[in-house]
Length: 117
Image (tube, rainbow, N blue to C red; front, side, top):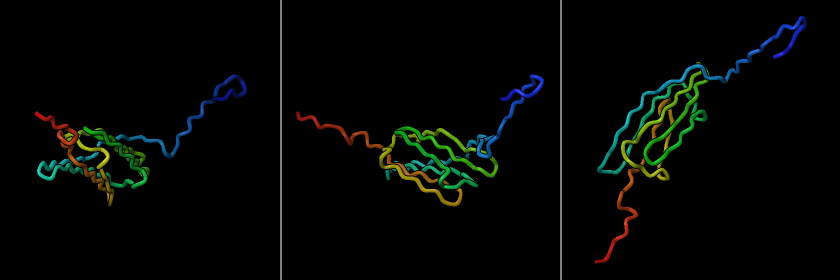
């Protein structure tokens, strides 16, 4: 904001090219395979570049944002895996507008201690 002659105030609003106008919830598909103890998630992100995706994973759910600069939009979602997974063993790949997340289901007895009778 600046003061001009005669006491008038000029307000300049600068709109960055990077500012997001639209928030979009993308199509998300989940497949749980209990036999192989895996969860596969597919997220459709047309027009997004790989370097514009941020993915964070927790044992029960994940969060991601993906900016699409050409239409000044951001795909964003928090989504539940449907089962508890091992975040350290989770991988992801992105190709041609499709984000694939591969997770391993947590074995509830993996860290169990056997008690001798």
